[in-house]
Length: 280
Image (cartoon, helix red, strand yellow):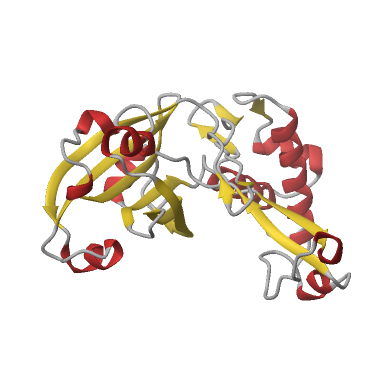
């Protein structure tokens, strides 16, 4: 058999790097050369180009428009997680955020949510499903659960504008103190895809967060589905001399850092700073 293997890793990586250079050097909406033109320009086969293009379309860096070609995708929404004295603070995410309430009801907590909020399964909670939009574009579907006794008089309109945590503080005297949040990769089901205006089974990020007040009382449980093509997690690794900083050496594995690199030089403290979903 002669010719290039359909998915030669080295050639595919070269095509990918070329496409990334185009994406990073051009403004959103800029057209990029056709697959045929890229094949001629880079001297690779059509399957190799298509494989690299498909990857960048899936990850939200390129968009295909039927009959028009391929274009640089809109910039992804990012938010920095900044380290404070005792924990991490959340600066405002980029873009103009609004919410549209899809469902608002007072219901029984049930067993699972009751365990999360440390209330009886029969206790009443306020359940809110809302669509988060950035600059008018659907970005996430959020499902919030709040003990009803903490938010008497809460209205659906309160969840469509402003900061929910500010509402808790100013109207209900609830001061949020900390939150534990996990992030997992997932895909959008049919209903979520419809709301987010993406294809079914599109890549997505699943956020699961439990928020507590200063006394350690759970005040909010929320899980959210964010578009994987428009929302990005970026980590900054900071390596500090633990001896001079008076800090212990961090043990365990740090994502993306091989154990041998993490261990050298001796006495190095590593912490991860990443982008997370916006508040409120």
